[in-house]
Image (cartoon, rainbow, N blue to C red):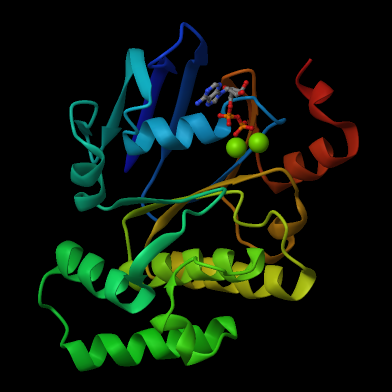
Length: 244
Ligand code: ADP
Ligand code: MG
Ligand code: MG
């Protein structure tokens, strides 16, 4: 297994509010898993706890990555191991250009395996693929980007950086149908590169374009039901009452 989340409970560090209430989830190499759950059920919290956001405190359970517990690792150490997440609401980073961020992050993850010219060429190919102008690379990260541009920027970063595990937190929210298709096709290419994916979403519509191994219905801080793609369509029809 690449990722094993075992009976994980976690709370906000600054308040006595337990949000994760016994999450069990295992993702194998190259697999694509989807988590669907109602607003406020703790999906973003799960993504943040896997990533090691210090805003949250793990109370019990474990998170294993490639067979080893990562609970004691800082966020940057988890990133270095090959775990990456994209944000539901991506941050603006004034003063840092997207191409600089991509180059520094790539070198940190993969060292000197490609020349600057190769990397520069790959970046330009990727902005072409997501349908943005090359100037996009020279703008400050997310500053003044439209919602769709932010999501495209996030997926472009993931494709370029080639993590082992990619967690996408509502990458599909707020996208029009053409942008959704572009993002989905990038997700498929990320999978082809061998990355495992955990896709958090409210809607089954992105699944129309994706190959998916498992769908988990996530309610009140834990996985309540697991199935294949058809489960996502059932949820869309029935609502989350399906778990009762
Ligand atoms: P989801 O992503 O499924 O919508 P979240 O993980 O964002 O859910 O939130 C789970 C619950 O934890 C919600 O009730 C939310 O209000 C609460 N929560 C999350 N982060 C914070 C925070 N920093 N301060 C207060 N409450 C929070
Ligand atoms: Mg939400
Ligand atoms: Mg969320």
